[in-house]
Image (cartoon, rainbow, N blue to C red; front, top):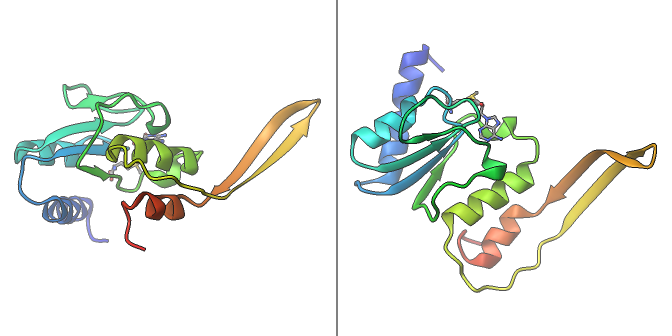
Length: 144
Ligand SMILES: C[S@@+](CC[C@H](N)C(=O)[O-])C[C@H]1O[C@@H](n2cnc3c(N)ncnc32)[C@H](O)[C@@H]1O
């Protein structure tokens, strides 16, 4: 992975190349200290960067993706080393889809499995598996 500054630079170069010419409306999920968000804003993209521990600043919001009120829709959503920190990945992907994809009008049917551990008559734990990729494909926003 190389030393941290080199890793950060290569992430920035990769993301800038993927997004292409500014201006694009970009959401970063789990921005950490905000280096990537600042680099994207610096070249002219309109950036919103969310993280419960986001720094201060006009492009940053201190919030979790699951409850984000970021101003959708976005042209691109980027998450670097952050989604594995999210407790409910299915919900997070749903939020990302809501924030990044304008309504398609497509009907979807996606399978989900939920498991609950009940203790003293209350739900103590919840696990879920959702076919988020299948849903995206049915929406027509991911290639089949
Ligand atoms: C390993 S850091 C990566 C930070 C940055 N993307 C980077 O590459 O340096 C993971 C980040 O995800 C954030 N995070 C954790 N749960 C999150 C959630 N539910 N929504 C948004 N960000 C979250 C953490 O606060 C943390 O800053």
